[in-house]
Length: 384
Image (cartoon, rainbow, N blue to C red; front, top):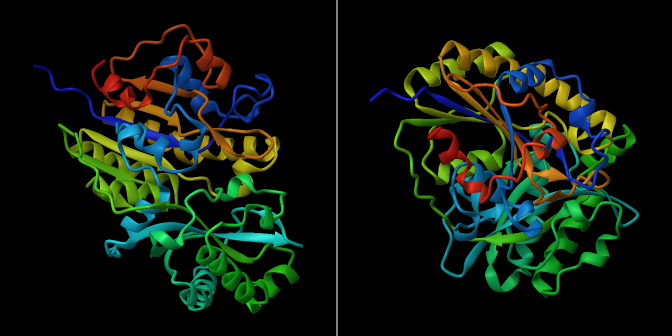
């Protein structure tokens, strides 16, 4: 039996728009992306519905589905996988809770994902918030950037608190927790961070600060039972991605690559020994992909040059196949993720071009009904 070609799966974070967006005006259409255009012309573009409910879009469910795990039967709380990266054990009555920095302006959420922060700034701000929030029974653990994780008893956490992305431009008081300890922790963190000298300096320089810690989305300890029949590895620096890979027992070859050459070299090395390599392309800055359409198009153009090009080159040199898929579609106005179908692209050894369609939302929709359930995508591609 002939050995299957190695497969690289490239996840492009948040580059698709929800279907309500005008199809001719989405950032994927407007972006200059010669590499994605070439791969789409030479391969197949299809549509896939990774998740079936908008409520699953805020956590780990889309990434879990891409890796072949059924989100309806798997822990999907983002906090669970941030906790896996932190490596802190839980007592029986405890849970992990997502703990995100928020930037506020007169009580309004000005930025649900402020930054970037220098590592030293993050460490100092976390230490200050942690010292205050322990009075409410919450202790903070470092994640990355504005996304971190806390540990608390389940009884002290309101599980229905909204994720920060739904709060942009709205009063933070409108989303207050109904559990007293949870609300107390928010107040303690806000009191210590609002006047912190790091935040004051950032504001004086025209930037956003980390004005409070928002606690949401509790989850427990989780282990994923891998289903790989070939050697597998992963690349990527996003803390949620790394936590999922750790929970699934997938070796991470590197946290991230600083250059095209570095990413291509690492992937080429992986494909020499691994039958499956999973690559996550985290957005460089939040402004690039979650703000206005023009900035998002520029961010996609950067991903096309700095990520897609070296990945495709490494796959071609290995005689392999490449699956490119975005994790979620996002609302044009708010950046909030949703459960709409997303485009996927299959290219490489043994894949013939079918009805040239662009790697866009409309191009994927033209391919027909979306593949679902989405967690079957990886198995579908591997058995072509």
